[in-house]
Image (cartoon, rainbow, N blue to C red):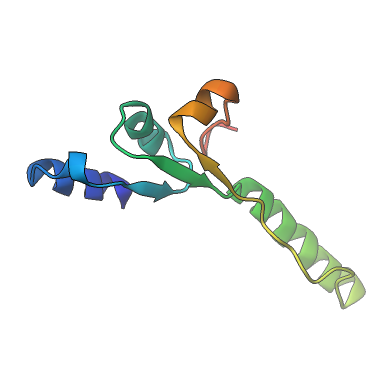
Length: 94
């Protein structure tokens, strides 16, 4: 959606007046981030969430319940500056 928002803003000549933030650390979004077209992207580590879902499903299947029922997904704001400090690989490249 952020890529669509960038396209619409560019066509309207309003990109410089907007702050666009994406959700998901996708490869295309990172390119826009590094080009200065968006302010940041939220990383939610879907690979971690998928692994947790499989673990919880296994626990429920084998034990009938889960030991821990509060699973908070880590999130982080990725900005051009943070990419220079620590390269977090985009979704699909980990």
